[in-house]
Length: 210
Image (cartoon, rainbow, N blue to C red; front, side, top):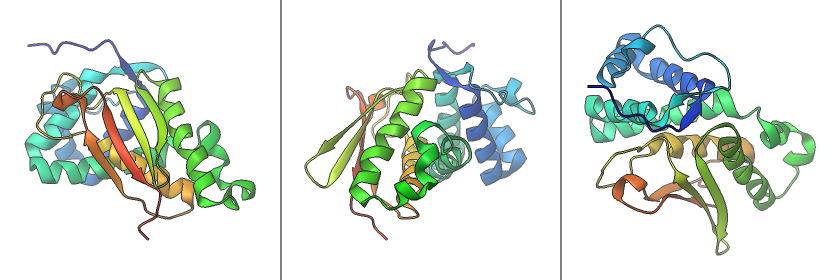
């Protein structure tokens, strides 16, 4: 039976990078099994084009995540999704917009708090500009940043008992590493639309863990 589409889209390039990251992590045969299980047989050997056209439906992106969990279990699927999310940022996003200036000396000498204050909203703006994902960022107290997903491509139509949007979590972890010049940060998912919450929330703790 054909999957009901969401009518909301990721750019082809973002989906392509995620799929390539999965292939790197689990091999071509493993990826093909995931694509089969996700009902995306037409993508096998025929990845989305390397462009920013909005062409990859949220329902299909969610199906990839579901297939990953079904095949590797909750814990294994989470680990693979985190790695795919990190690779997606490293390969696709760091050259976009405000993030392109992160390697400039003027940015490198900023205090850590200023780097985060510029870098995290810049990540959200990339998704708001190039995809149908809706993300917002605000600070909470002095020690954390809240990154929200008001429309999410990772749990579209899902009903879950715990947060499942681990690709986004990995993407934020790698983005923070890039913005901070190599530091690692704790990123925690606290709510998820798939659980029936009003939105997905990631808590980013400002104090690096290394």
